[in-house]
Length: 214
Image: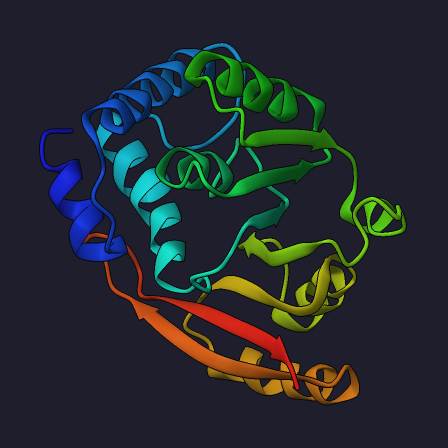
């Protein structure tokens, strides 16, 4: 996609190198080819991949704290937003958690194809993984993209963040859902630190809900 470099700068505030643009091109080709054989995503055109998967994923960079060194993504699907973040920010260790084996296999092959030493995938349910001492309270940021309703999502993410960490939920605009989450936030001593509004042409408006500990 010829103008992806400009779009990434406009919507995610990041300057992609030629090497990174090449990695995105390889990932797009790999996703579209694999999708012909294995149903990974409903998006099957190149522009849709770049806008609805790559660019949408990169908008997370507008919300993560500057000193972020580790991210765990819950319910990664075919690797979004994890793979685009790992490409764009090689300084951040990105862990992608997905319970469906064929999607984890795709992510692992993608990591190898793109040579992303800062990324890894785990085939497990988040509820079970959160009990593992190697993952419990170990991450700067927990992300989730359209996994479940916000109150349940918060409960799912809490075990992974350390005391100074944040949860970033990628959600469609829904005030009722935010209101429903308030009780969970209060009970867990959490607060909505900020809401970053994302408006990409051709996509529904989205909120990045950034949640931190009080």
